[in-house]
Each structure stands twice: as structure tokens, then as C-alpha cells.
Image (cartoon, rainbow, N blue to C red):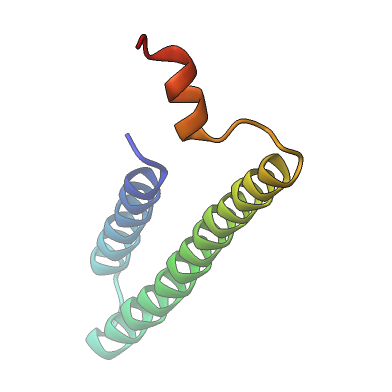
Length: 90
């Protein structure tokens, strides 16, 4: 299961729980709607932050891989095509 799916499931569970809690609390309808809107905005902000962190993590990993590939090529390490020729029988 991917990290994105897990995060989405957690946020959805929190949202449903918060909404049900507010709906069953004895309060005026206008106050209830206001609370639901506020909670929704908070959860949307949290989800946006988590998504941004995930994108940043993926970007960082890709940059590391790119730097490592450049370092290998600059140091004369065998390139994938050369390695394939060494492994494949003629």
C-alpha cells in the first residue's frame, strides 16, 4: 500500500469522525455548519502540507539518484549498455 493511500485513508477517517462528532453534538445548525467548515479547512490544510512533504521527499530522492548517476559516469564507471555487453554472451 502506498504512503499516499495511507495518508488519504487517515485524513478521510479523521474527517468522517470529526463531522459525525459535530453533527451529533447539541448545537444550533449555523454553529454546526461553521464548525464543519472550519474542520474541513483545517483538514484540507493538513492534507496539502502532507502532500507537499511527500512531493519534496520524492524530488529529493530523484535528485540524489541523478547526482549519483552523474558521479558514476564522470568516474568512468561502466554504463548500463557496457554492463549489458559484459553479461550477455556473444
